[in-house]
Image 1 (cartoon, rainbow, N blue to C red):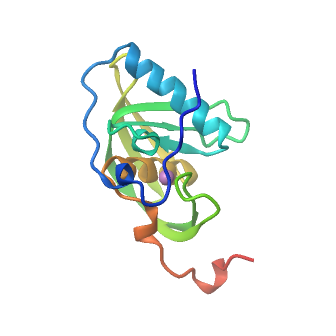
Image 2 (cartoon, rainbow, N blue to C red):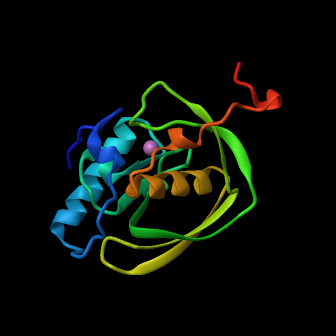
Length: 157
Ligand code: NI
């Protein structure tokens, strides 16, 4: 395992559409291992492959406080959303920044694990936000395009 360099700001790979994974092989497993290590090292809740310069549809997420709830998703798709949540969001590619973003409160994601087995996961709140944020990265979209002024009651201190 190795920590990979996180691309930031105007790096072109952050704004390109990533290609589907076709081989569930050792190279994919190394990428997933490295992405998890890189995410934990940076203390993030999610990371998408384009953020480490790899234009493939691969994400990792861990929204748990004790950092033992790793989700690996290959070729993920958001198949259902509902509700609405507003909150501050950040991104490892834009360190020390955050912005207020409205997202669905619930999201259902269909994806493949590292061995090519399909699964579905339903997320609410932070997990839904993370799944939507990371899937956006795979289409070259960063959260900053969604930032709106925070409503008065949610203003940051
Ligand atoms: Ni991000």
